[in-house]
Length: 329
Length: 173
Image (cartoon, rainbow over all chains, first blue to last red; front, side, top):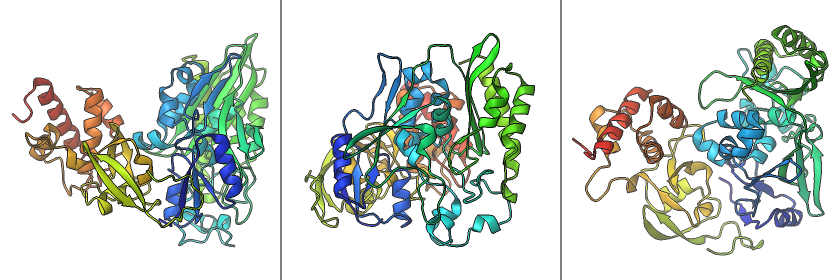
């Protein structure tokens, strides 16, 4: 691995100060994405600012107003095991517990899960050209065969954001607290993602001096129906090919305040607003799920090798809605 | 440990650290960008921990950090400060092989053997939490360790045999 300086921040505020002083620095916590990219020389930063000792960022708190505060360094294993998560945010605990492998879940953090870069095989191997790394060519668009990391929406870059935890956070209207040297600022989940640009590896609005401090889930007065489903090739240690998280309330027998988010289908976690509109005000049935999927997928423009994901998205939405309806959560 | 928060410390100068490995404290010097896997193998000559994909995709570099299976390829040596590290070299006790090691040898639960140290340590962590794990628990808990010889059944059987012997208090009979 390339040599770097390793600076340990004692607080998130100190991390922001260190980032302001070191323009080329990267934020380190679990290292499961960053260190892999540094080994492959996809990232050649000279300085890591680590949150590994930063106070408080490993906590999950239920606040007095009922909102839930999740520190940036909370791991996927901690989310999956957390009593607060399992009780109030069961879809988040479920998605976190299904991700990766036991060892990776012990390291991978919620903030890193959002900020991770694409898992496109061509992006990850410096020997291939990549549009995101500044080349003209994109091997995925030219390749035949089945593409597991490609999405079905937004054609500028066909690689999909791989997180299955992110669509759940989207469905919960999570807010991301981002800190820089001037202080913290809340970023709505929708606004956290940046459209793909040539030569830009990151998929978020995080700038050079920014560090994620926490994820905040707003409180809800009414009973919440939450559902999650993912489709993947292997039972363990695999990425979702498509994931789907839904949340709604029931008002007089009809779905209200509906959220439908997909993972692994677009360069960012993808909010299916047309599906939400189709479901809003109706009953939660498999027929409604099919109509909502039609609405959501009307805009799909997959490369040939990822066209199968349209079907997987239909299946995932139907299962996620059934999961919510059955009220196990 | 040398203060790593000092912004001017040159990236290539070594840091001196006390590492607690297999119950003993070791004074080790290494460059800050070395992974714990590299520190163990190259600076401490503990080559039982295997070097696989280096990206967290295979689990062969699994060690125990405070009793929890971790990937030494994705953890920096610097992060092991203050933690209790256990590698395969620390598994056999004064009385000989660990019951898991004995069972793996008896049942042929190692083929090429490259994944074996990681599996043994991950299995030890499972048994510490759940002395009589179901097969489903084993499959789930060992899901992060790949055996490219695909010898999974014998590995599960060996862990179950060791678990049964450890319950009876007869490590190798």
